[in-house]
Amino acid sequence: VMTIGNDAFRSCNSLSEIKIPNSVTTIGKLAFATSGLTKITIPGSVTTIGNYTFSHILNLTEVTIKSGVTTIGKGAFSSCYKLTNLTIEHSVTTIGRYAFGDCQNLTTLTIPDSVTTIEIKAFDNCKSITSLTIPSNVETIGESAFYKCDSLENLTILGDVTIGKNAFYMCTT
Image (cartoon, rainbow, N blue to C red; front, top):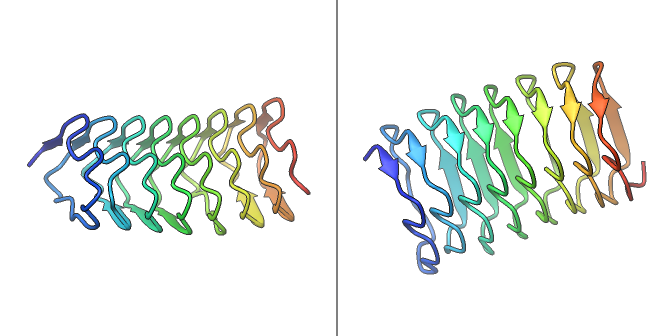
């Protein structure tokens, strides 16, 4: 298997687990959206996680993105309300627009040093994040990127970064 096409497993509510083989290089948009997955590991053979690929998966609690993935697409994991454990290994350069928006139970977020761009609303309404360090390689934080992260108590920005309008609006920091 080299490609998982658009909508391939969309709305497969009984699908709770899948192992994506290292031969897969492309996962299409909405491929697993609204499925029953509880955890997922994206192998490093996949370079881009497409738009809305894993969005609205109501029981998804754990995501591991292996080294090799460079782009997390628009809305890729949006509205995965139960997501608490997120591991992004060192190779991702872009976290797309609304990529993790509305992941309201995400408590720990470690942005790897490889990231240069955090797009608009990337972590919008991630209400449970309490601490965040923006690594020195990040050049751009998009508009409303951390909007309504209202539990954010500790914020460290390590480099010279352009911060978009309302990037941290409605945060307690």
